[in-house]
Structure formats: C-alpha cells, structure tokens
Image (cartoon, rainbow, N blue to C red; front, side):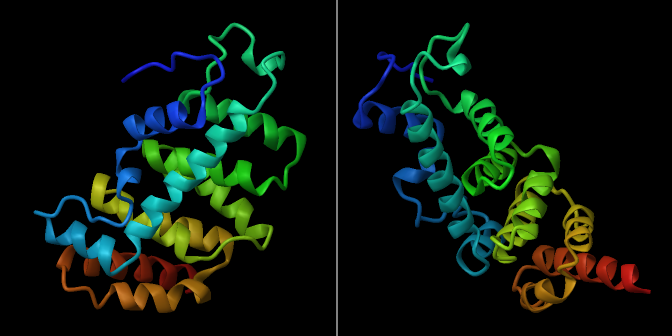
Length: 202
C-alpha cells in the first residue's frame, strides 16, 4: 500500500490513499464477486451494496476528521502524524471517551470492526447506536449477512445481538424477506437467525 507523502495531505492525495485501502469506493454501486450468485444476491437484493458503501462513507468522513486534527494533539505523539486508516480506531475511541453519544465515533468503530471482520462485526457499537435511537435495524442485519457471505459466521452472532438489543420484532420482517432468497445459503442463514430468536422467547 502506498504511504501518504505529506503530513497534512490534500483531499486529492487523501482520496487516492483511501481508494488503495477501500477500492470498492471507486464504484460503490457496482456488485463485486460477480461469479458468485449468493454474494451478488446479498449485494443487489438484500442491501449489502449499500452496507459496503456506508462503511466506506463512514471511514472517509472519519479520515477527514482525523486529517483536520491539529498535529500538536497528543494522538499524534510517537507517530508519523499522517492520517491513515490504521489510526481511525484510536481516533474514534478518543472521540468516544470525550462524548459517549458521539454517533460518528460509534459508526466508525462499527465500520472498522465490520471491515476487519472482528469483534462480532461491531456488535458493541451497533447496540449502543440502537440504545441512542440512532440506528436503522437494517444496518446490523446487513452487517451480519455480509459477514456470513465472507466469513461464514453463522446466524448466532446476529441473533445474540438482536436479542441484546431487544429488536426481534423490528428485525422479523427483514429476516422473513431474507428467508425468501433465491440462494439456499441466504435462506438457511435467515432461518437459523429466526429459530434462535424464537428459542429466546420460549
């Protein structure tokens, strides 16, 4: 990956750098993995294209926020003082420490966890956004679906999250739609999530 040449890069330099790390943002509405019908259906019918674009948008906004941070700030100590995607986690956590309701910081951390496939695709931050009343339930469901497509997470992680959020009712119509997918893998995943949610109410 190329390095940023300037300590405070221009928008153009920062964008070029960003596309090297998040290349799908060059064409966020174009399906990837076009040879895989399951992934194409997840993207085009079930919102994973929008989810991917949202991750890119969130990370781009955070990168610009980081670039605007005064280089005398303690966050830059012992670094090359360049705004990289690998500093976004620390930047977002700093913002969240200052304001536990910082929506952009919560979204950034959820996006990073989703992007790296870590921490159950950002469940802690999805839950906090939900508690603040600032989350469309479709976003964590899309995150769960995308990670099923990419990493075969299974339905347990999403079911656990929906139970913790007490969002079973809001999620039900979306899961029922997913259960009508053409692809058996998507259908099976949706059924698994719904069965786990049903068992939680038993």
